[in-house]
Image (cartoon, rainbow, N blue to C red):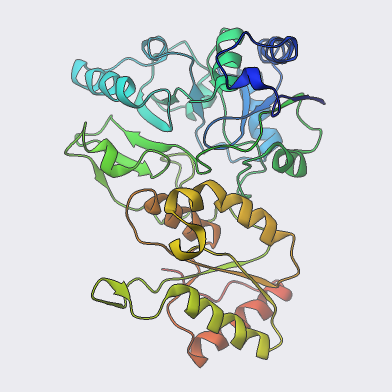
Amino acid sequence: MIIAELASDPSVWHDTYPSIKYRAAIRHGARIIRNGGLVGFPTETVYGLGADATNTDAVNKIYQVKERPKADPLIVHIGSVDALTDIASGEPHIMSTALELAGKYWPGALTMILPRKVGVVAPEVAIGRNTIAARMPDHPVALALIRKAGVPIAAPSANRFGHVSPTTAEHVLSDLGDVIDMLIDGGPTRIGVESTVIDLTTNTPTVLRPGGITIEELQHVCPSLTYIPRHVDNSPVSPGNYLRHYSPRTPLIVVNNLGSETNGHPSTHTAELISELASSLSARGISSTVIATSPEQTGSLESLASNLYNYLHAADTGKGEIILAGFVHNEGIGVAINDRLFRAASGRVVHDSSPATIDLIASFVASEATNQPDRLDGR
């Protein structure tokens, strides 16, 4: 595998003439894409695993390398707003809304599901459906690669299916190793969680996956926009909608203390509750790794989102038998953070540190150790 290190190349981010190394990396990556290969590359959200979206064999390689279910559609990345009408075609009111959203939020972390133009991208991209998920990423390397390749690029996250998403080149290497043809290292990603997916083919525009563009922002353009959390296993409606997704190998349990509030504030701070859980579990001989998720610890929800997958990757390399984290306030990008935590935990949520809860977690840890079914009810 070829690794192109561009993280320290100033011409990637500054308005200067691209360096020889930058141009060579983009040229080589584009050639691999056109020849049916796979390239890992940075976006503003997470690292993507790119292939020519018009090439069936190349698209199938993505599914094979990621061990991704063929029922899970891929997002197609394009290099300009104008390119949207090359791959999508719908009723005037649908395309008008799509172009209005694209004009405001592209390039950016917004994926739109639209009627698919037949005969352009490989049907496998859309798992045979008559729709397509499209976005224009906000990263100079991603845009340069797409434009140089001259084809739309299908690109899910560059990791094994269901694992924690990669936000650094090192994450890609640790999960995919040398099974891809090239990796372009553009340094850490900026937003840190995947794009927001919005379905424009329904009567009411609907968010299928919260992400880097908040629901509140989108409602400025689509006041009727709705979001109903989809906590159903094996859902092929949108990328990232499986119940178990973004998951570390070490089991994760999420603490939800947001329902017990006094004067708008949690009656017991989530961080304190997690500390109590960790202490009680330790007394039972169960080691845990705690992820800081409260604003007091992380500085802001945006900072937490940017680092969330880094925290999960780091926790997964620790010695804890279980990982503990807490939900954040369900607003802004906090909606996306909570969605990722819920799926990373496979729906395992607790609400207190009572002896019954400790017993339940201990039972779960024991069942994991003996490969028994999950006994925690996360619904």
